[in-house]
Length: 222
Ligand code: ADP
Ligand code: MG
Image 1 (cartoon, rainbow, N blue to C red):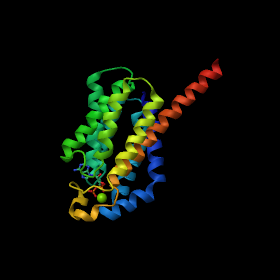
Image 2: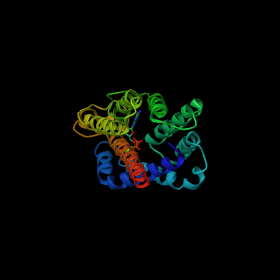
Image 3: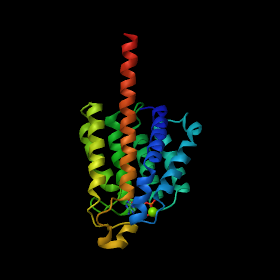
Image 4: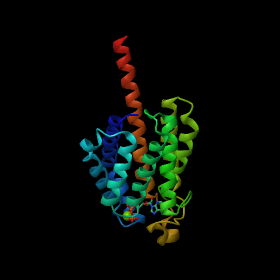
C-alpha cells in the first residue's frame, strides 16, 4: 500500500458517506443528537483537503497527520475516537518500519487503531458503538491477512462489518449518548457503526478495483 492508494481510499470513503448521508443522519437523530453525519462529513472534507500535504509523506506519517488534524477539527465523541484510531495505526506502522505495507503488516496496525478507540472511549464489544463493527473486522483482518487471498479478505471484511452494524440494532447502549435512552435505544442501529461499515466497505471496494485494474494492465501488457 502506498500513499497514493490511501488518497484514493479517502475519496472513496468521502463519496460513500455522501451516498449514505440520509441513513447516517436519521440514525443519529433517532438515538443521538443528530450531529454524527456533520462530524463525519467534516472529517472527510478536512482529510480530502490535505491531499497535497499528504502526497509526499510515507503511509505511517499520512495516518499520524490525519489523526492529529481530525483531533483538532471534528467534534462529538466520534472525533477524538477516530483521531486516536489514525494516530495509533500510523504509530504502529512507523514502529514496524517496513518499506511497503501489505495486508499482513497493515492488519496489526488496524487492530492497534481499534484498540486505541477502545482505550480512549473505555468501551468494548456489545456496547452499541462503532466498536461492534471495528473489533470483529480487526479480528477477521488479522486472521485472514496472512493467507494472501485479497479478494476473499475484502469479501470477509465487508460481511463482518455488515453483520456488526446490523447487530447493534438489538443492543442496549452502555456508552455514548444512546446510553441515556436505556431500552428506547433498542431497535435502532448505532450511527457510528453505520458510518464505519460504510467506510470499511468503500475501502474494500477500492482495494478490489485496484486489483482488477492491475490484472487488466497485466493482460494488456501480455
Ligand atoms: P456525539 O455522540 O458526541 O454526538 P457523534 O454523533 O459524532 O458524537 O458520534 C456518535 C457515535 O460515536 C456513536 O454512534 C458511537 O458509535 C460512537 N461512540 C460514542 N461513544 C463511544 C465510546 N465511548 N466508545 C466508542 N464509540 C463511541
Ligand atoms: Mg451525535
